[in-house]
Length: 117
Image 1 (cartoon, rainbow, N blue to C red):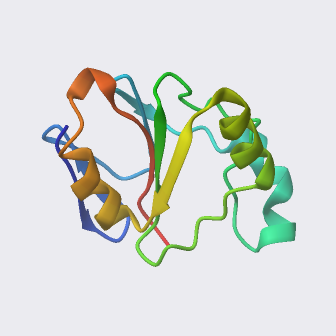
Image 2 (image 1 turned 180 degrees about the horizontal axis):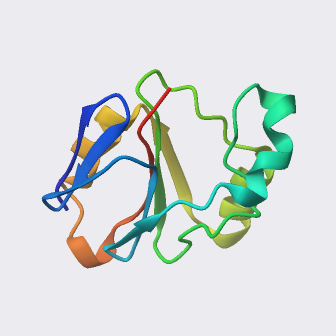
């Protein structure tokens, strides 16, 4: 699957540009809804990824792009849920995970890509 970080605040997935975080669920791209995680913002200094969000649990691995400077926090409950489901979580700066996505077939991609911080 083709994805790349264009610049701070802008990402491109399969030739389409986005100026917000995206979720890739089996190759389908949608906007990340941070609403359920905003309540934890004060605790982390940034809106984290929480299990309250619609996380794409469909594959054997969940790829999380943690932003330009790798500042997106992942709450422990997300990691615990992934472990419970037998899903490997790969979290790294967004530019790095975009390179990893190149090796994943479009219909088998399950990822969350943060395009700021």
